[in-house]
Length: 210
Ligand SMILES: *[C@@H]1O[C@H](CO)[C@@H](O)[C@H](O)[C@H]1NC(C)=O
Ligand SMILES: *[C@@H]1O[C@H](CO)[C@@H](O)[C@H](O)[C@H]1NC(C)=O
Ligand SMILES: *[C@@H]1O[C@H](CO)[C@@H](O)[C@H](O)[C@H]1NC(C)=O
Ligand SMILES: [Cu+2]
Image (cartoon, rainbow, N blue to C red):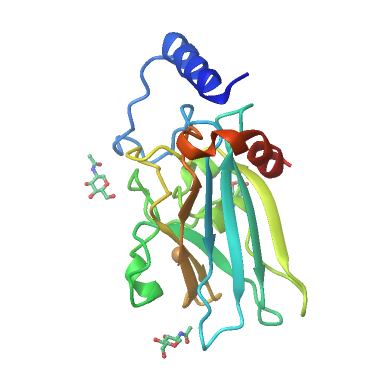
């Protein structure tokens, strides 16, 4: 089926079957599951090379036709031996000077705050941007690369939504929370897969759903 038509049909089905999903404005600190993500978005963020860390990596967050959940694929290499790293989506992009401390705090649209620390058994109670809190820290033996793929139910791929991340950044932290390196998300395929990407949709979906 033509993708734009499918997207419209999905949107129509959602509109008919669900109450309007207004972006919750921190009436609760728990994160609502995002049910109205658009299919076929791809966002990617690489880590900036930094003189004083060996850490490098990238994160891709994509949406699927089958579910409003987003698929996260992350890799982090160059992890100092014996260390683990935290990583988060932060609430502001990396400024032009590349300073990771310019990205503000974590993406936390519902005002949950950092304390107490995220409990991995209840990810809906965590800050939306606290990916390592919700899914586990990055660790790898010397010379190896940490890699993880998981579903994210609390991030939004539609610009303007409370939990939208596509114009933000991610930051990788040392165990003492120093900001080692960071990078900005770029829109590879915009939410809805509209515009110039139509001819590549099948390929993109196949590649990023795998
Ligand atoms: C919502 O969260 C912000 C911080 O993220 C806080 O300043 C504000 O007071 C909160 N509003 C309500 C109604 O809880
Ligand atoms: C996390 O939550 C589980 C289930 O409620 C609880 O058993 C566990 O002690 C909690 N862990 C921490 C570190 O608070
Ligand atoms: C890395 O170097 C920059 C610039 O010298 C410094 O501001 C930053 O604090 C350093 N980061 C760490 C984790 O040492
Ligand atoms: Cu962080």
